[in-house]
Length: 79
Image 1 (spheres, one colour):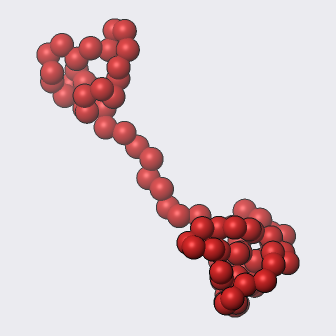
Image 2 (cartoon, rainbow, N blue to C red):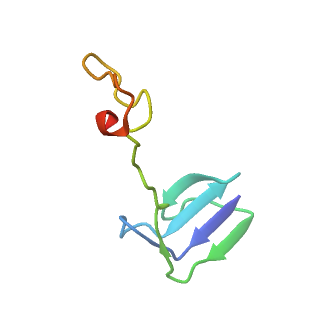
């Protein structure tokens, strides 16, 4: 288990520690418990991962439902 201390955690100005076990977050806060390894982040900013949520309207089954059939099969009609 690893414990990261002295972190600046985006979205939580009160918490400064992160406890990680087997690659999963177990706790975020202060005094989160003991760990085998302690890593001092020295105030480094910790951010959530970047996610690019989007969809492709030209893919079949994107718009399933009544009235959403792409009869011609063209990209224009799919969008």
